[in-house]
Length: 316
Image (tube, rainbow, N blue to C red; front, side, top):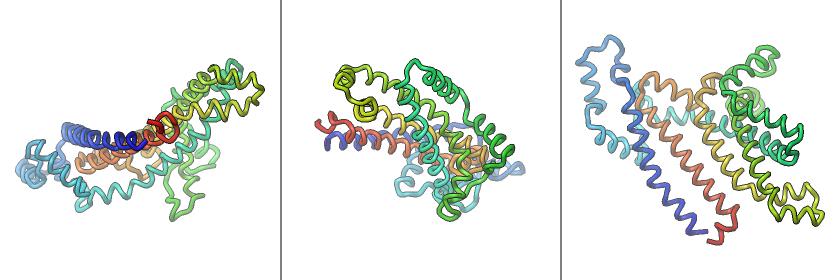
């Protein structure tokens, strides 16, 4: 187990290095000139050239990369080229909490919805319930989050006035009831799609386990069906469920930009969209690197949880 953990930790180093290179190149190879965006339409060629020299944009890409990477290792993500005097770290820290809370809330909805329905579909295979749940899962996979979000706004916010259409409340300053009122619609919009995917994966894994010989042996001994589902079948689908939950959290972080824009949530997704419009290289690099590092850490956590959940790994 100790060797397994060490190997997984060592793989993080080259992964982070490759991620940093990819993030830097993607941002700097996109069209647009941040200096021209900063100075506006009235800027002269000389003004733009002077700003290029001051920002170091005339240096070769490899020089710019190592300068940026060195600053990142010291905890310095640079300063925004669109907001004068604003550090990238301060901007990200201000917008970090709404995105993380939205991702966690959407995943809670996904888990509470998908796992019971996936187990029910496996238990009632071939029944009317299974067919109805299959239609539900196909609808969830096919429906984009922004369309679902707009439909929920029209129905629950505009028509019935049950929940607010836009906005955000900090749970630590405004209270958790206000937070849940404002974040329920975006969390459902973000979590519904992945709940359909998780439900299908749970059902497929449960069906595979339920058809195994030891499940047939347990049934022949008179083991109650509930015990078979929870104690035997679900425990052996746990690795698949852990993988899907981790990937769902990553998908929630990646898909938060559209939902945050739609519901007016001041998260990293909205900050990313605004920074792309302004060609704010430093902020784009910082947000992309932050999300990429979160993805790496989540995958690392999934691997470590595997080691705890699978006795075959613990015995290595």
